Image 1 (cartoon, rainbow, N blue to C red):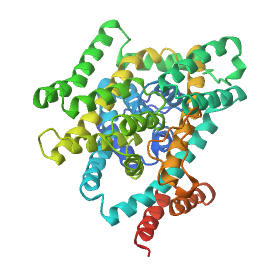
Image 2 (image 1 turned 135 degrees about the horizontal axis):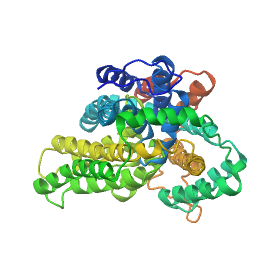
Image 3 (image 1 turned 45 degrees about the vertical axis):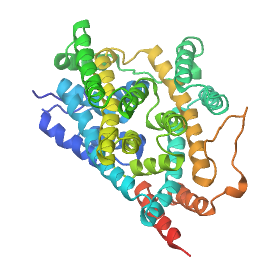
Length: 455
């Protein structure tokens, strides 16, 4: 089945599923730069070049995906694919957005696990970690500029940062509180949130009718079908691995942890990393802080969602506790299982909620909650930036407690001046000289190799 372009102000022509497949593959192979870069790429290809969807429709889909747990860029691709070709289109778009990056990150994880101790590999990752710090800070500034439109939103971001940085308030609690604040503020102090709602209601309804014609109206029966199918796909590999390796193996733990992450981690990839880094490093001890940074460097240098760093984490967990099979096979199972339970729920959230969200394009309460949640996410990303900066720039951070109540700041004498110089260069390259992410990563990686072998 083919679908017309989805907006009245966009030239109408048929878009085949095969044509969409090719475009989604192209986007996947070029989607470097984390969620901000990937969203920008999708906007350029789908809105500006292909004119498959209008800017207003694109932003409405993005707003919904930012409310969901998990990676908003992959969910945005799934949503737009669903709009164009129904469930098949959503599955194709969401899968192709992940698949190339997954294959690459698994290959690099194998190289890292087998040869990571070699000077060449360790030197390369030393340089990449310094550049990643600049990437994270740039993401913080970019997202903050887009999200914080009023003083009240700046204040909300500051409160979120203090809550998670100083008092270790769980991220879901922060998000829930921000959402409630947004719902209240939009009614009592609407100017605090700087909302810009969809004005062309007639056009919106025309688009809703076009979508309803191909996707069908939201019904309880349809919702139960989506839950049943996605739920079965979600738990099937977990049951199989329990049968094969037992409940005490590492694999049920991997599945449970990343399934929980898929449900409770709102705010996109950068916010998810703060949650995963603390638990996987300090609590579960699947890897150390330096390896977590190495994984982020791998994800930053490969196409696909930044959250594929979780594939690296799952690979190392399975590699180090394979449960009676070879470490390499254990790593492959761990990485694949992690990716599966991370992304299958994303399809569930989008395919279940999209038909209802299509009817709420001008809902003021939803927009208020979104604005407040996005501001809180900025504060969480600031916390992540501090965490990464301390682990990159100091040698003996260890299990750092970032709280004010029990501070554990590293000694100034443990400052790694090589890492500090590379990080300073990366920030100049990206902020002042506008080198772009990939050239900056390449230069810092080469510099890391040079410093590793310098006398």
